[in-house]
Length: 327
Image (cartoon, rainbow, N blue to C red; front, top):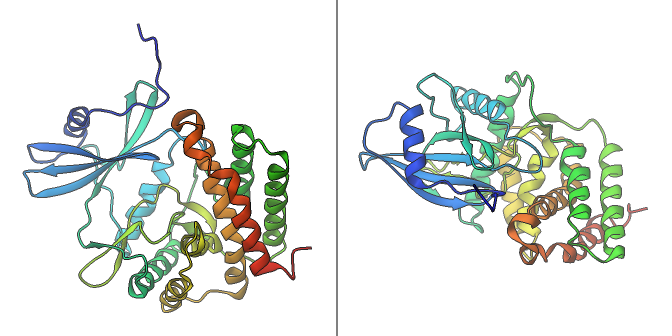
């Protein structure tokens, strides 16, 4: 009998090794090492001390089950289209994902080819340009991808309204005025986006902040971590990179310009999409706040105490960029 049922369990590396041996046709011996515990559990998988893979075990998140079927289908399409990405490795049965049972319920796992190359340098304009080029290649390839059914869409309901509700319901914000301010900021962003022109819809990476890639010997940015992706606004996919350069005290606008230059070297950005990307910075920040607020019961209230203070950043971004269009 269990007295303390887990919200989220961490499998032993030996259990991951056994699971991989059952489902994948790999050489022996297989060894695993936990690399990261958080939004997902990520394990480095080594075979014969030479072949390397990455096994990602999806977390149970407030947005629902991991959309691994759509994600891995898109990754397979990108690989076939020549886009530099970390592709999924098929199971013995030819599937690109598997499900296993943890104490808290079913969790989805995907085995990926491990990437070589080096990590991205945050302030390097060349690396930013490479990220822009690869994102443009992703969006080009998305035009020939049959999306089909997905578990979620990167629309305003998914990116803004539900995260705002998670912030409110978490109880982490106890100042009523802060909640009102956040609601007003979200409403203004949504109104501006909905009033924009014909914004481009595509299959998004969803988390292209610059560090979900590695730079290979050819100078290309090879992408991974598509688990936040799905059909959505192209402007949001651009905005995630901009947000990463200006949030939490960063001021790396030149890196953003290099990213845009790289993207435009492959495909154009419409004026409406570019303008909307500025608005989607607000959406991205509120999305992240909502993601963390939904983990209060798991990580503890101390780990999310930064959330109420973010109204200052969001207000400043509005004033700096849209003061003549706020009302």
